[in-house]
Image 1 (cartoon, rainbow, N blue to C red):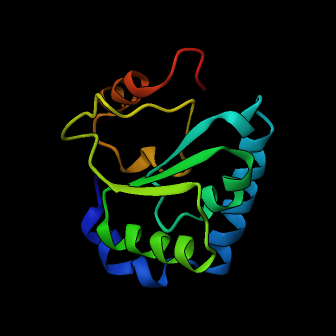
Image 2 (tube, rainbow, N blue to C red):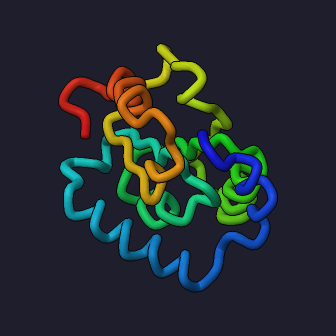
Length: 136
């Protein structure tokens, strides 16, 4: 994903009050579209430090936090560990470079991610491939 180097450098200072508020607004907007999500799996795509997904984690059966920045993934892993969250996992992976055929989810959401993507059509088609039938 584009700008990974930049995010590697700012991961430990990413959670500013402004970004936390944007994540709260984003997660509340996403929540309005959830249907029977308590039994569903989700992917927080381009999760960064997990600000959006952490607000939604109790709405899903399981959550995968996915990002191209290992330092961002490290930040969300610390949050998961310190909060003793059992229904979350992390993955550092770049869908612009490759696809994952064994990964599946009922919901995939992202906030402020597409502006960093060079080939949006390719990325969205790869995400669609991992979306379960009748997924969102």
